Amino acid sequence: NAGVATGRLMQAVSKLVSEGRVGDALDLCKKTGGATARVLADTLRNLDRDRDHLEDIISESILHESGSLNRFGSFIMVIAAVAPLLGLLGTVTGMIATFDVITEFGTGDPKLLSGGIATALVTTELGLVVAIPTLIFGNLLGGWSNRIKDEMEKAALHVTNLAQSAHSDLRLAA
Image 1 (tube, one colour):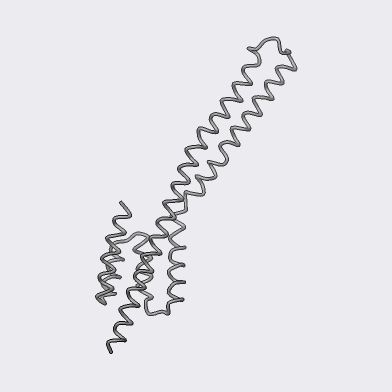
Image 2 (cartoon, rainbow, N blue to C red):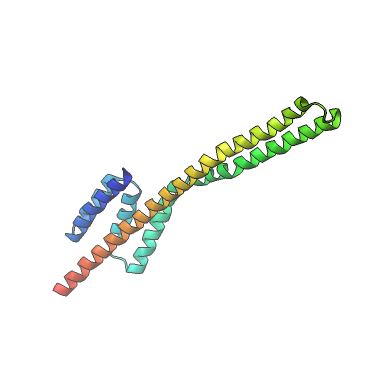
């Protein structure tokens, strides 16, 4: 589970930073890999910056990682939006075919009308069959992506706070 791995990494990095072993924490992040580890590594490399600048670096790092997290989400949501439109196109096509039959043969034989109506219903159904689960999956994927970004930000800010707290404790002791 990615959340468990992130939690373990966060605990280990927090312990190292609170002990003043920032270099070891950076090595751990490099060895671990993954989006959160890369954001933490960027944070650790820039702990000497002022708080506002460091928060900008963290935001930039998270934005950089967001590209890979959001890569498929947009595509899935486009499919979810287009599928019912394709179903509607089939509905219109089927109804046009039905009216063509009515124009040519009249309304006397229901069997002649049923082909166009069936096309209209089947394409509508297929559009919805594709759209509904795709929309659900797209929303789940978006939530997962946002949760990961929130965890990255929380981890980076936690390390920042720990490091700045340790630094101010050292100044107070001196």
